[in-house]
Image (cartoon, rainbow, N blue to C red; front, side, top):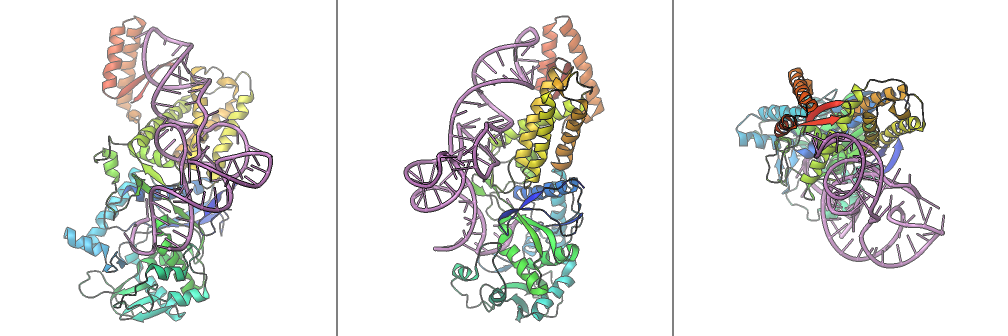
Length: 496
RNA sequence: GGUCGCGUGGCCGAGCGGUUAGGCAGGGCUCUGCAAAAGCUCGUACAGCGGUUCAAAUCCGCUCGCGACCUCCA
């Protein structure tokens, strides 16, 4: 286990706190997964990317992480008119499919997106429909403790009663009286005792294709319940980190806390983490607003607002250049800048790995500077996973690497050990922690060999001062988006 | 109406009381057959108005603008 000085911005205390796991070296990490009724959009990707970094960095530090991320494949939810809607059932009707076909289709889609963006899969990916029994049991415990009541075969959580005995609203800063103002007009048809009560088991009649037997009749579990059940089932009644998008803070996460307290008397989560929204033209990107860009659209560039496509790693890099807790706005200019920056970073990484290291003639201050900058990279990561700052430090090292490329005889006073550390740091940070991988076609041996041949031919022409031939080769390759780079040590190539 | 957050140089984006963030774009120089790449170098920004402080982008107050949540959403 590496020395740990990791600090996390805990959104429930609103403070940056030192991360102390409950049972080191084990860490429990739960993240609210997608509802699989439509293709995942980029906003989803940003959140799951943020927690991919959390997962990866914790592992890098030596923790044994159990990462649980659910799939919401069932659950009653309400729409803006207050009507009850089963999103998956609704989509199934639209596509003329079985609900479980919809679930399967979009689960596969979601997995494909996480794979393309190089996210590590969770250790457990439980589905809500696979935990109906546990959800029923939790509802029973809530009822037994007096915080749930049945009405017309549905069960509701008695929020006013709960709030009297507990500190409700801590996470979102909502208080229960103010919430009442939010929904002033009490719907006469509402069967709840109080508008603020939320459903934990919802009656479903024969018209609903997905429903289960329960002590209260046929129905489906409430949306908030699944996360409470699955997180505590696999991570314990109290666990380390719970994450999700900011938009889930209220009511979803607040309800989770209430449910766990109501059922088991335990506050379930020690560190809450919330990611900020990805915006498009300053507006939150969301399924319901209809302004979302799908990952494949951004990759292919097929979208009215895009000039071109961007590679998955460019997109990943772009997102990592902003802190997860800040809003990030998507634009062509910003993506293009990220594309170039990403390439600069990865090319330096390649140069570094290919260096033949030898001891410098004389060790100078530069050696200490390089070591200090390497240390700084991890200081930034320890500071609430500050990837933009960590990348800034790495870019400082990129300049160092590139300058050695020019005068590589002596690495300007840096010891061999430090150079090896630099190599390890880049590998650990770029590949393992930030999850960036090279996209060059260089891994194709045939292409590599052909390119080397072409470079050799051009080198001959250049030696003979046959500039026409050498420039022709260069320009034609350029047209194929391949760029030659003449350096002191010979010519290398890369994609434009 | 309530809760929370944000406004940084041409663009993106860190920063949380005193230090060059970083990337992209732009100017100059070096290297180079030319170009590209790379290196060096330049620009000196913090919405506005007040206040606290030896010192404020950073703390406090007000004003303006923007966003999120309060209803499904990552």
